[in-house]
Image (cartoon, rainbow, N blue to C red; front, side):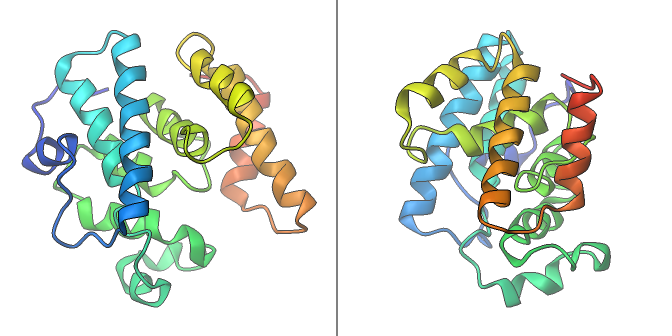
Length: 195
């Protein structure tokens, strides 16, 4: 993880101030706040510097900055190579594109891949992937999800396997396609590529 100073966008986001281009309803902002709080707590538990704690918090705030924008408006914001992603996953690459050069590259990567996962996620990216899924307002199985949240810092690899497995099972049960990024993440986890 980088040790550089926070950028202005990261410093604002760490305080819950989103860029002007963000499209997020009050309900979305509440979700982003819960993700940011988880990211902050995990960064503190990991013993990261205050700068990195703020960067992790900012990542939680920024990850869904374009989630409530119409998908048709997101297509021009993503790279040609990402335009085949499912419409519900375009907000990550679109926000990452908007943030490129304004935040740390690790933040861009985490946001780009937070919906589908990716085999090359670093600890920040994996934490965002987990926080987005495990934040307390999103799931009804309170005890099970709380237990997983509590284990993220002590056993991140095992928690990643459980969460990716749960997400894949949900897609299989719903007879939905599983994106190649998710399959490659799953394969990398099973072959021992853990944080």
